[in-house]
Image (cartoon, helix red, strand yellow):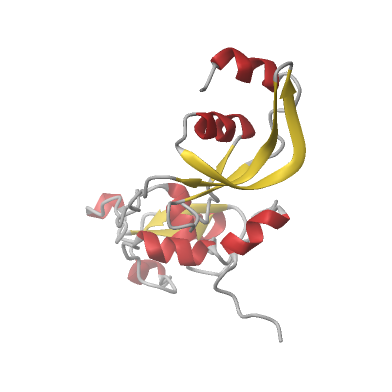
Length: 194
């Protein structure tokens, strides 16, 4: 049974930022690849106590209270399947992910912002099909003009991606931190070594 005071005592023994848990759906696939679906160790332990997840793998690190000891979960799987959304939210991050963090005018990867292909002053709307990733210099150079007026055309036509497409794009950007117990769940579809 979960007791809030028990978690409070355990929290004092570990740093907040360490030991994240990879969160898998009930089918043992990550809820999200990019950003990677991670919970803090506190949230993972609380979910385990509430029997909302199964602990699949653990860290070598253990937490203790006077009457309890538990190894920290490194991978947890939800007990109930969460159906992924087919239409991702229109956010700056998802836009950059759709365009693979690349300016659609020059190919730069730094100083990214977004550009209205048809400018708002011409009636262009802020939608998936009218906004593209641009570096600040290209965005400034294009200004409030149409692609034809500026002689600047996006490398790919803006489109509304599916969640699956964003997940696939996200796999190209490995996480900065990847515990050894996560590899079996993140890279199950890569080609095996001979």
